[in-house]
Structures are given as structure tokens and as C-alpha cells.
Image: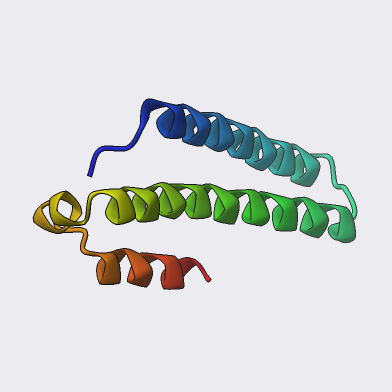
Length: 89
């Protein structure tokens, strides 16, 4: 399945932001920050990663709905993309 370039760009931006969040968490650990502050940041990074996954699956669903035959030929019939969605939910 080919993803639109704007989706790829968006995912890359999201992943770079998440990487920055994780590095920030590591610095918090090094600095001896409070547990609740660290957990809050881990939770935020986790939500951001989930959103990146949903963005990817959303693009896949759009592709499958607009091009069902091509999606199935690529190994992404709608029921498979639905399973991917359910893994994130």
C-alpha cells in the first residue's frame, strides 16, 4: 500500500517529536525529577505514539475504501486493516 507523501511527512514529524519527548524523559531521570512528573511525560509520549499509529491506520483505511481491489492485491483487504486498527484500540 502506498501512503500519500503528506501522511509520511506527518508521521515523521510525529515520530521526531516523540523521540524528543523520550529524550526529555531520560533527562528527567538523570536530573532526579519527581515520579509523578516522569509518569506524566511517559503518558504523553504514549498518547502521541498511539496517535501516530491511528494516523497511519486512518490513511490505510482511506486507501482501502477508495481502492478496494488494489488494497486487496497489496495484501491489505479491509478486514486486515480493521485488525490493525483493533491492535491500537
